[in-house]
Length: 638
Image 1 (cartoon, one colour):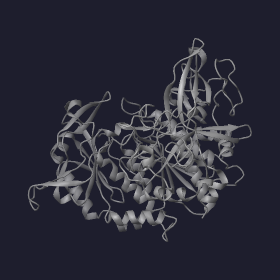
Image 2 (cartoon, rainbow, N blue to C red):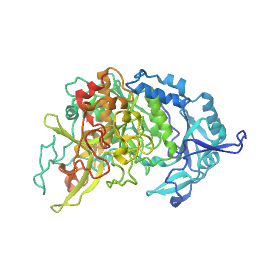
Image 3 (cartoon, rainbow, N blue to C red):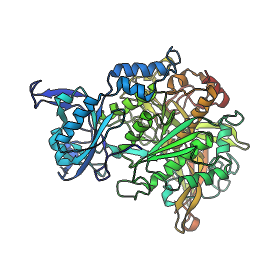
Image 4 (cartoon, helix red, strand yellow):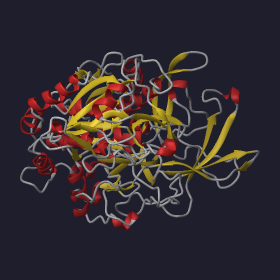
């Protein structure tokens, strides 16, 4: 069982430091201090200042320690994941990684002793010595790190941050790579899940009419061109058929996929087994499903800052998506006890305990505007995963280039952690599945919406779309350069381009899931259509479980192999500037029945009006494209 900091401490929050860049006082002096660059998040500006943080407020944080021989760790990660390398696939174990690269026990002890001397309670250190978790008060943090924690009003929220750079004793400078827990940048974390504009915890049903497959029902009663009613939600057989899994004999047998989310649904086994029975899938049991959670994670009540039940839908989606595509794969669900920074501790636990060969994550930050120190600890975990042959997948985001559809060059950005060069970023498409589970085509997921009011269509508004773009944090990685991708051709500068691949994410053509929900008349199981790149990531992770089964080995960090696979492995997703494709969607105004009336909207597919475009070949909306069934598996089978 992995541990997190005590529940009595305040929000576990984002990293606030990256590199030690300056020391105050003489080098050998006992009171010499080293400041931490990137300690102040970009939103902690004087114009946003509200008040000093109360000294009695609880804080929980982690002091991160960097890898020993970090350059060698990166070199190893590159070589074992590069199909052109003699070391390809020669992964090391977690024990071997710890022996070669983990911080020493003496380094950990030095950090622990210093924290204890400052009055903090030291809670936990994982077996890879990646961090030391501690807790105390804001007053103790102010004194220990030489700062004043303050409250800032940002986007209507009151967030905490240090008002100046953190510092630590210079003796710790060679060891400490970051401090987690002294600012509230974690409030940017969100699941990339879209359920027809209503959370599943509140109870949601699809309103009729809807189509059981693409084009089954045509909306002839609305003005303008005739379009089909939106699919009711594709079932596993439809998705397996559309993506070419049917007939391959691949089921994910002997493969393990880990899912990381926050909290844990108390009805997940019953829900997935109800769903499995309806869709002729194996039932979950102790041999093919495991939940790894810390005490207090189950049945956690909602509060103003933590929507626990809202994350139940995320777990349900992720588990049913993986199970639907790879029904014989083992699923390990790891639920963090909050939707804040403890998600990174959950990932570290999966990697350091080697719980799975594939890890899917359906959450992220809206952009890359984070404290610099947030990045390195996460990337260190990714590097360990790559060295051990673990592939980490992240949803690319649900808000396009984060400009609200305007494509403004000044503010456009991909999302983090999808922009890390050490993960596979999965974008979204709009999928057409025909009668007989046939593939009829895909669009890049980018949606305009207009609503029918008094018999006339209202104005078009951008509502959502696959995240992507060019990173401002990372240069273009070698696997993209080797594939002939010119990142500067997208946004005018060199950088890691997102996403890498894509699968269905559009909630208007999404997946049908089943979950226990709270309706006005009862709490009961029901089904609903869902989307977002929260769907795309677990679907692609499941496809990689099938690819691992077909190849007879784990692909680990798959990006180099994915980019070297050749265009035949993918279905290229290409849109046109003219809006020609749409679905008509009917929704219950109250989300569950017709008593509150109906809302009819037209959802245009493949909108090309932002800075992201689905073009021939690789693009920054759908990446290389979506997996092309047997050709995809064959390309990765060597």
